[in-house]
Length: 458
RNA sequence: UCCUCGGUAGCUCAGUCGGUAGAGCAGGUGACUGUUAAUCACCCUGUCGGCGGUUCGAGUCCGUCCCGGGGAGCCA
View (spheres, rainbow, N blue to C red):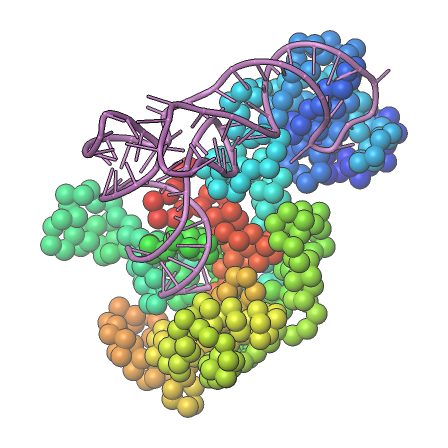
């Protein structure tokens, strides 16, 4: 395969023959020559192509090139005499592979608003910033698998179509092969494909627990679906979630893995996507690089829920909803604790059992659960996790209290009947991680094809 | 879903007291031997989100619906 622009930019120029295929970002006609900035998506910087009138199609095609055209360039890699780039390509042949009518091509050689780009999700990956997001996203994806593999984790492919509702995780999309008329019958799902109601997964946790209790350290990482009518900058109806699950692990071990993971992932982007981070530092989020440095510099801050409530009540700061033990923390509370009290990622632990789902392990105080949330500046909750209740009687009690049918979850209870072991895990919102690392404020701009209430264009 | 602010040229926006709309950028044509969001000159650009109402007259006022931003709830 031909070397990509990312490699060519690092190659010492010696008039060697090269071939480049990509898209025109800008084209400047300066009298007797054209400067064409070509990108192939491999990196942020484009490759400058010099086209002179000796090209056979100079007047007919080259001078008319515009943003978005697909081109193939054959030429020689030379040292650039001007500032701005070390190397450039002296074109010997330039073929227009696909034109892009500048009268109607939506992308211009100027900055566009993210709202406008969101309306053309099929073209926005061609822009500098969305191209950079895509590369960082891919880097983070790879780093997740690499890190967990290094730590001895096994990846489990948990089902996308599921019949078990991970209570507390949100509304499920129903999956059915029935037509709308059949759905109006009294008990429609008995006639449905699976003979019972099925839906798109809201979490792979319960199935991950199965493999944690056979393989020790496992993770599931895939698309997750929530049919919530959430209209915020940090929720999607379809998103990616990483869920590690570890046997013989308590909440302390759970937090240690989550913290080490986040630090490693941030480091991977810092060393492999430095250009992209600089772009976001300059144009998206001033202070981003410093914020990421702060992640590495010291251990994450930690406090219990009870301490958090106390800190909020004695802070002297006025909140729209005053903190009160027993109520969940409000967004304003989380922001204050994380951004102003801690000034770095913060882990809040041991929430009241009444505001947490049935599977979280009851603490010895009988009032709190072994839960932990990792809050990060600018985003809020990045990770939610817990030690799971491994004691059969206590789990059954919690399930009955939550009004769940124990028969439905008999397989889950079997895990406690046979060879039960302490285990813990967490869920990390992948898009929120991409938001945190890039400083991009709206989650719709870190997802290639965001799905939100009323919007799923392509 | 609730609160709030918006929707005017391809994009970003201005538009006063109700009197049939304007700027920058982009685009077009030309000039220019090294440009970096090139520069300079000239030119083009409108269902003022949709529907209904008030009025002699609505981009402007009223109602309603749609779409978007910010905040909240739910959570990753």
